[in-house]
Length: 466
Ligand code: SAH
Ligand code: SF4
Ligand code: F3S
Image 1 (cartoon, rainbow, N blue to C red):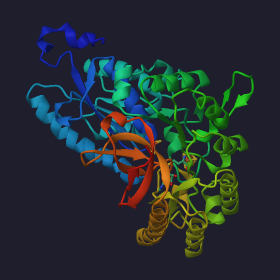
Image 2 (image 1 turned 180 degrees about the vertical axis):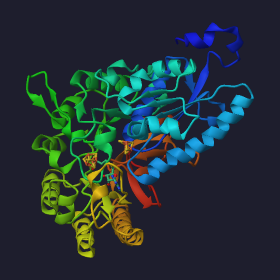
Image 3 (image 1 turned 120 degrees about the horizontal axis):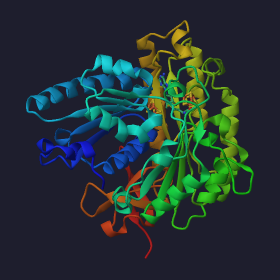
Image 4 (image 1 turned 120 degrees about the vertical axis):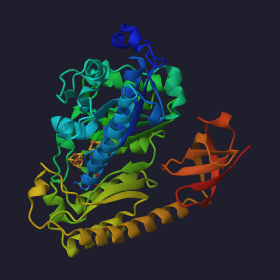
């Protein structure tokens, strides 16, 4: 491990923790932030920062933030308010506490964060994480650093990977970002502004990382992207490859037992990808395919660029090759101009699809997006009432899906110790948490189990077979 030259230069700084600074990373938002936090942690480890789960003992607190809804962004400022007091107390004791803001709020608000929060030392956007160690060094010299450029160089190429042992300690299921950014410009959404335009990671980099994960004991890889199925690269055969081709290639890696991907846009579900679901046993039968609304009028206003009918036809095609595909989705209620009839269309599309899992939100007006300027913003109480109706329908479907699994024998990937001694928690092919009696030494195995019951957020199973 290399250490920060600034911290070791002066004897006055040789407190017990001078060489082993600790970093606490708090992650908000989507899986891509979860992945980025891991990569930032790895980059900081090679700068001499050990990770800690205790905020109190950290020398550096990094908030990896989300800007998707107003509430998400507000959380960051209230967290920073609390950190300000913590930093004051530390400074009074002559101790250091550095505060960094990363992620989508950093990208969206940049300098503004420094103005609003004097305790923040570093603001770093999602495309410049490879420059975080350098930014921290500058901050330790007394600068307040904002780095939110869209870097020309590829951050992942410059971010170190963790040691195998560390990867192993993180478990048997891992994320792997293959695509970032978004060119879709849905009128409600900040992502095209916070993450920039669509960029695909090169094939070689993805294959190397997947192989490394597998070599470290990972059995399941979830490919990530804001629009993961917009991933493109030139394949070794000189053809343009899409996500389907990538999945076929990844399925050849021995030991990589399960593949997943998220999040997909309906317009980018091409034939090859659907074919992959038909052909690849390792590609799990679970698809997160947000539709947002069931009303064509609202879909148009959202700039989703497909109709409700097209979405339903797409799902029918997917189910024709993969009948047991579990569908998941995202919904927004109360988009500007949404009438009762539009909302009824949303309930109807939910009825038609029958979701195994879903996420639903009240429309949140985001500054800088076209939706913010639309007339007919919907009153909060109407949004709340619609959300409640939608969620109760979705919950009913979710419970029915869980119930329909009872009695089935399924493959379970054993992931981690359960709450009860003697139990292990695993994942079903449909992403459900399942509790089963098993030994810790079996973690990483895929075993056949029979589902025998359902709980509020998980299923119960018994092992079958010899
Ligand atoms: N790229 C994905 C979604 C990324 S954001 C897609 O196209 O589906 C995750 C979810 O947050 C979205 O699907 C949407 O349901 C929700 N969301 C995004 N912006 C929102 C806003 N302004 N208000 C409420 N929900 C929002
Ligand atoms: Fe946002 Fe739409 Fe892009 Fe998804 S596709 S990230 S909802 S702009
Ligand atoms: Fe949030 Fe940024 Fe992800 S806004 S949802 S953290 S891409």
